[in-house]
Image 1 (cartoon, one colour):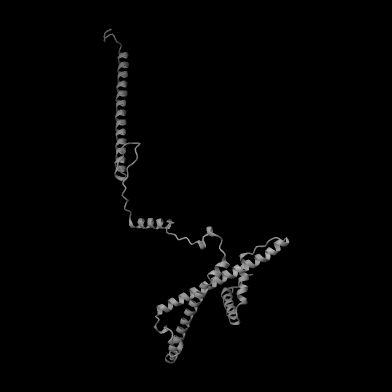
Image 2 (cartoon, one colour):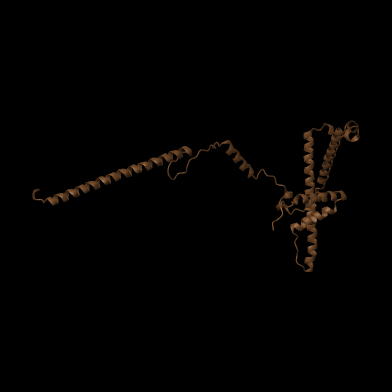
Length: 266
């Protein structure tokens, strides 16, 4: 069959098929090139990541092999170093002392026995308290006598001859005042604890006798304990202390009371 015998429509159809085949072939080649460039880009990023890891951690021989890391400690900034040292020292149990007298695993704390065993500490505190109080009283007398102009007569007394109040500086006097206030507050705190323990122990003894007779136990509230402590304190006060306490309470009540600024509109 010659080319001249082929109809024109058949020639056009064949050309269209050839064009579509060429287009498909070119599209596939472009796609392959694009995939190759994408793969090469991915491989480049992966290699870059591996290089960074090598710089940071060390040599990696293969995929499944363990990583080799340098044994040198990384130098941290000063702030982070201080924080790390603080946390390390805080959680380091080897440096903490263990006193068996105050450890729960070594038995229950008996407060009465403890006070009897360490009663000499109260005597030492009382001696220190009296000594500081005497020095402060002498300093007060010295300042008043200097203001009145009678210091030359007062300093000849035996109190000032046996003391070093004259040579004390203002900073030392301020430190003594702070120490005196601290000792007073500690003394009051110990007294409150002692009264609290006494009230609780007395109440327990009374309740034990009631429980033995068949009654239900009654537990004291914190409010009732505080009231009993205040009552015991008030009983031990003298007349002057009672009057001073009443004046203090009256002043507090007066400061709390605020009269209305305007009458309520009816």
